[in-house]
Image (cartoon, rainbow, N blue to C red; front, side, top):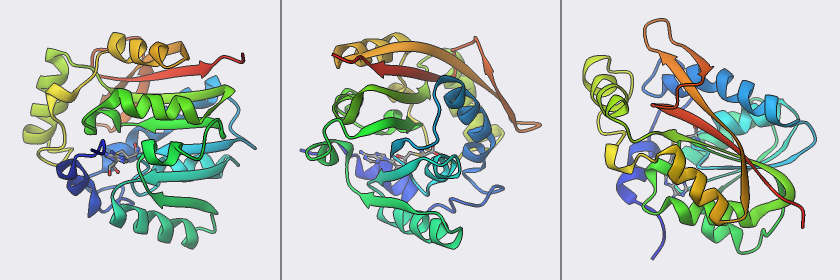
Length: 231
Ligand code: SAH
């Protein structure tokens, strides 16, 4: 059985990915902060990068703009079509494929210098399986980034209830609180698959002025930077 929830894929398949005022606007709003974190951890230029759960390509294009050689994978075919079209019309060369991380890992063992898997783990049935596949695909000495939402009461009240029903900044039904992952759980999954966690950092988001930032508070969204040791 594949590690894919069709219900989750449906939520993202027909999104207006590049509309910065649309349903996925928060992904655009937090993007500079995600890159601020990643660029603080690793040089992206010239790296072979894989973006797992790339959707319409918001992160993949950010990586390509920073001169990484990018592959983006996602199980939503229409999102990949949007990603392909957008990259071409912006003269960016990105290899997009409709495939799971687990399947792609079979013939891409230790092929990537940098792997990003942002806002994706909370949408898959078994996140540890994606982390294992990602670790397998990372070169020794490589860098990997995850981001997700912590399973706290605050995240349940704000990131799910208020965001979907009051502020209406994310589409209804986007997030299931029970699928959120604590930083300790993510830390343990990384370490279990040979990754060394170097940094865990909270990400704040103000829905009123739409400004995101890095914070020490990991009670809602957070980012993880890990590396794979050279043997
Ligand atoms: N990483 C992007 C998009 C996040 S939305 C960004 O942060 O901007 C979550 C994405 O994960 C969606 O595009 C969805 O289709 C994808 N996804 C969910 N389950 C998946 C799976 N099992 N394999 C690959 N992609 C998946």
